[in-house]
Image 1 (cartoon, rainbow, N blue to C red):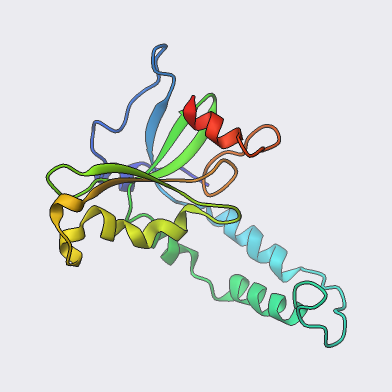
Image 2 (cartoon, one colour; image 1 turned 120 degrees about the vertical axis):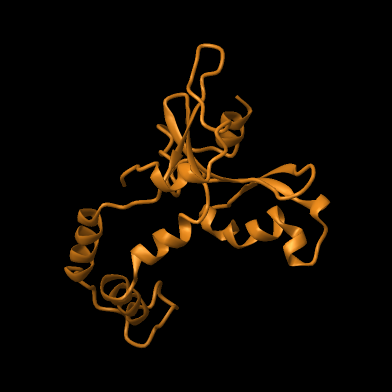
Amino acid sequence: MSQDSSTAADSVDPSVERRASVADPVAIEPFTVAVDEAVLSDLRDRIERTRWADGVGGAGWESGADPDYLRSLLAYWAREFDWRKQERRLNRFAHHLAHVDGMRVHFVHERGKGPDPLPIVLTHGFPSSFVEHLELLPLLTDPAAHGGRAEDAFDVVVTSLPGYGFSDPLPGPVLETTVADMCAG
């Protein structure tokens, strides 16, 4: 993963980017989704070299993941999936990294198009990612463009849980309260 602020920074409100200080230990920087080609090539190579175990004849999903389905899925990932197209899709949004207690936490921040947008935070569950909320962003940030009222707009922050998306993993076990405690400060 590489960081290049050229795309995200172009759409970022200048007040969003800030540097950490003693009084405010959180630094926020623009982030662009840009996975190095070497990483993608390595992934494709590892997929192609997969050594498949023999499946239980005719069991399908009864004895775990269906081997034929997995072979088909991985063949798609190795030969057809267009990661660069997905990067372009993801980079339509304003991505950021917040540095909290020495850990990078990824989030998307889209400002509402209304007279007084209400802030809202969307957090994904397990197992999932921030991507599941991206289709909601235009509806929440610009309701007037979708048949709603401009005064119902939200400023939306979509977070990536630690260890997901582009956030760093937590250094220890994740308990039910770990992420909540981290967000509360």
